[in-house]
Image 1 (cartoon, rainbow, N blue to C red):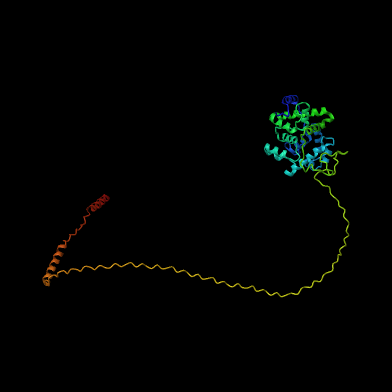
Image 2 (image 1 turned 180 degrees about the vertical axis):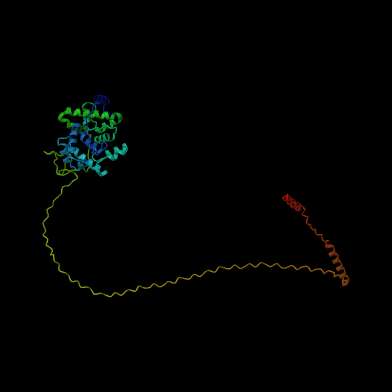
Length: 403
């Protein structure tokens, strides 16, 4: 049977009691920002992580007094950040180390210390980018997304989980990630801001009730989890927790009187300069005047031009045109001419006397000519009509004039 990390009935009673609380949360924005800046919300998230709003407000005031902008805070070392926020701040060195790593990671990605580019992206891209920042913690990521981009999330840290356990609301083996996952499933989006304010007020009340042991609430939770075999301590990347100097992991060094961790190198990735003693070697001075060397020109040797062998022209073979075979005409057999039939001899007419035939021929010709000639047609002669009308008209006109 699966056990929920939060008892729903007791949690509902907690919301009724602290639902109307309005805790004063500090803000830290860029001077020229028109809207809440994501980097300012990220810094406030690191200051509120396992702490109280009153301590975070005092740390924000010190940061504004000692730094000009977010980029100056980025280039500070961990010891310098601890000296700004105070050596008595809960988990000061671990907080400063994670904050510095996050600011440098953002600068490497965007070439500036700002998260304004996330405003034009979707909620999924915003959450993936913020949760993927180096040294990020779930509480700080959720706090940044809620304050800068209005995500419906409820930030949960170890102090809140221990406070819930002390009042019988959370399971003894519940972790911050388990409680945050339960909140995301059982708290509606419109109830997320009210739930967040109620939990911050409840955690601050428990912190004040514990007195000087308020900063030890997280350590109490982690000791109980380690005994049960649960590892809930957030870890940095391997290169950040590598042993330095005496082999002690970063974040676990004791602090000196000034509040700075006592370790050889304040930053795990920096190696101190090594000065190696070497024997001095005397160098003889070089004379300024250098004797001129006489240069004898070498005798000129006549170089005969090398005659290059002339390439003989290669005779190309002459290609003879191939004679096309001439097609011989096929002789057709000539048909033999058939012999024509011999003409029959007509009987010769008997010769008549020439005189009688000539006379008859002339008579026939004369008769033919006479019959062919037609009588000549009479030509019609057109006679001119008398112009009587013209005369009458002319006379009539004259008479009228004389009248």
